[in-house]
Length: 168
Image 1: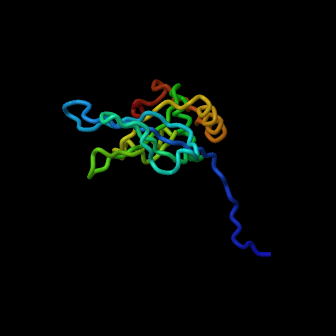
Image 2 (image 1 turned 90 degrees about the vertical axis):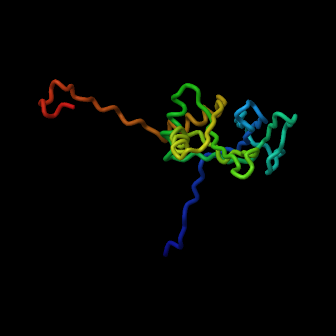
Image 3 (image 1 turned 120 degrees about the vertical axis):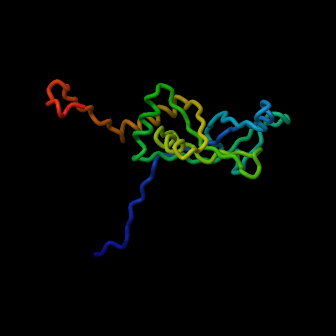
């Protein structure tokens, strides 16, 4: 009997979230607009699929951006571990401003990986963070514990035991 291309389906732990961002008009004499990440909340079906303005008083506008999927990946387990190790784990949200209309900004993606956020920063993306709720930190901790094992530290030989030419 021949294998006819059977590929086992693997599922990753995932949650759906929504991002709340705020836009402030003329916050000071140097800026026309200021954008700020307010919160990341669990997605609810009532949010729908399109961004929704929650409040707009002419000066400050809060907008809910629904339906982001956060999947956990084994190769990001170190990044999850590092985020948890800070003592105050956070959501990382990468967001962008419209080049043609600087009054518009939106979240692009959400992560809980310290390493992934670092790669975004290296690429000069805009990144903000807000605290991760305790129940989600526990969920993330369980995943990191299962999939990440820190490398044991190697003992460094004291310099006095090395020949003079080998000392740094």
